[in-house]
Length: 369
Ligand code: F6P
Image (cartoon, rainbow, N blue to C red; front, top):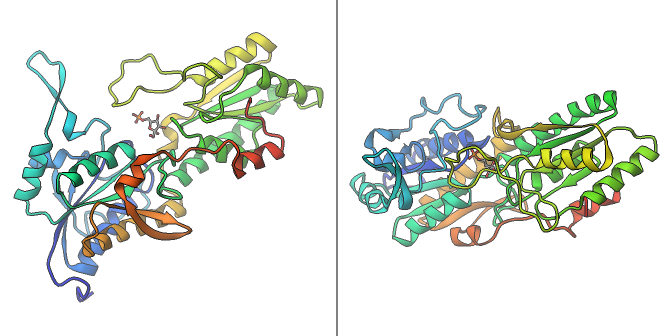
């Protein structure tokens, strides 16, 4: 202790936005511990993304006790939302209809009233873009990348991804035995809006036969050829893993028809479309498992707890160095920082001619291309 690193007492705030993600609590806990133990600062948490800047009762003071026991907990002790953009904040009008209002000036006003020295924004590209807008408006912002899809370019990996891959791999493994018992094709649908990383890594680790990802449009004929090839070789069951954002060549991804309350249209159902095509064209008994939010739930793996802890500590260190407008990131195994702007410029997509896809193809996995 001794607060050697910073003599000035700071008052900082942390929030998380978008979907929950295993490892978020590790970030919160590490940032809290570093701020209090290493610097002697005060650290606040804004509930449900920017909620604490809009309703004062949703701003909470973190203490060593309030974050105790959170390291191994899934979800986020702060709550989160993917509809919390203060620039387009959803508010009900007198008729009960949701209308967007710009609350950004209120966020800035509240930031100043609270005499905060920095805001740590933990999120995916959506929340980090909001953070970037506030940074441009003059707020001292630090970003922490969070995505189970692993689609943020400026970091090698984000916490949450490892847990999601572990969950998806365990599910694929279970599906193998039931598929073999019934001589069936089993399709496991995993998350991955624009990036197929979960499908790719869990697919290879789970020993599947076909991986379908958004980056490689597929042809049903190629899937059929692979299944026929396997049947002829006496392999009567097959496993397919499909990312929710995958689509046949020239076709759009499949969206859920249910009423959408999320900021983005909700994907889901490509596995059923692929199953129907297989049944229709090749008369092979096919079943589907959609993993959905199971992949976001549960206790984070040691890898994600460690990465979350490193990110949380590093974010507070960036505040200490007044290095604002930057996001912590993992580069060659080391924690570095990059401008937030760079982090949100492009998505980190699977390279169809990259090493992982090449490895998968070399061991006989088809991508339906
Ligand atoms: O961005 C992460 C993600 O898990 C996507 O893969 C998925 O489409 C989305 O979140 C679902 O979010 P929700 O159902 O919570 O709105």
